[in-house]
Amino acid sequence: MSAAVLASDTTDVHPLTPVAATRLLVLRNYLVYRGAWKLFLTGFLEPVFYLLSIGIGVGALIESFDVGGKEISYAAFVAPGMLAASAFNGALLDSTFNVFFKLKYVKLYDQMLATPLSTGDIARGEIAWGQLRGSSYAAMFLLVMLLMGLIESWWALLALPAVLLIGFAFSAVCMAATTWMRSFQDFDKITLVQLPLFLFSATFFPVDTYSGPVRWIVECTPLYRGVVLCRELTTGTVSVASVVSVVYLLVMGVVGLLVVRRRLDTLLLT
Image 1 (cartoon, rainbow, N blue to C red):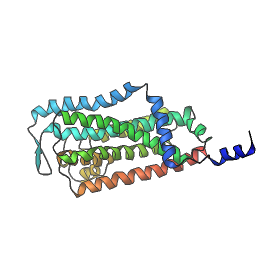
Image 2: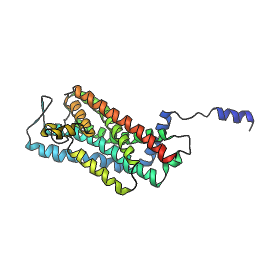
Image 3: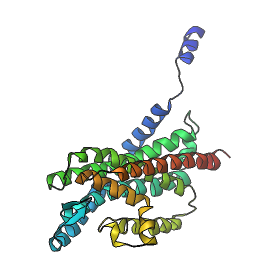
Image 4: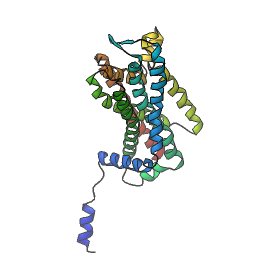
């Protein structure tokens, strides 16, 4: 082979752009999970069971709920809470247990850094995958809501971008938290946060049930912002508070992404 051909091959090689690197990592995760479709099925069925047991079952005992001055059924009240929780749970599971295993045991990220990939590429790729996993659960659940007649407004078309945002925010923050984990015993702390967020983020009852400082604390929690955003979109009660929720989740995701990159630099490059 001539020197001219070798020089031509070298000049044709270009570094990966952030978009291309993210796509490559998402594709890698897709190929790994392609045969594990049952994991995605269980992640989808859990909120459906909650909706059928609590939204429909308990809802038979409750006449209606008032949301933004609009009367809706209890099932229509609970369903968007389950929608947000689907994105939350999917993003959390993938960005904690799976990331920890790759980081601490199989040393996958060390291997990736032997390629042109950077810690920023790893952070974006893993967060994007966690976001997509959580959002896939929520997208299927949104279809269930539509078939059950639990969508009250055309604003619900924006519910899918909303769950993408929820998945991004929680995937980034949960991956950041995982970088401080030392063993699987530390994941008890994740459960200690996950369950209260799920139960007390106005998922099953309105936030005005609380009073004083307790209500203020609930309104400051991230899952509450996701739940109320999805509820406002599916019921058509969009307000300025919806913008507050969007900004809150966006800032949360960006901060989480920045922290993940700095932590990966510390753990893998020093």
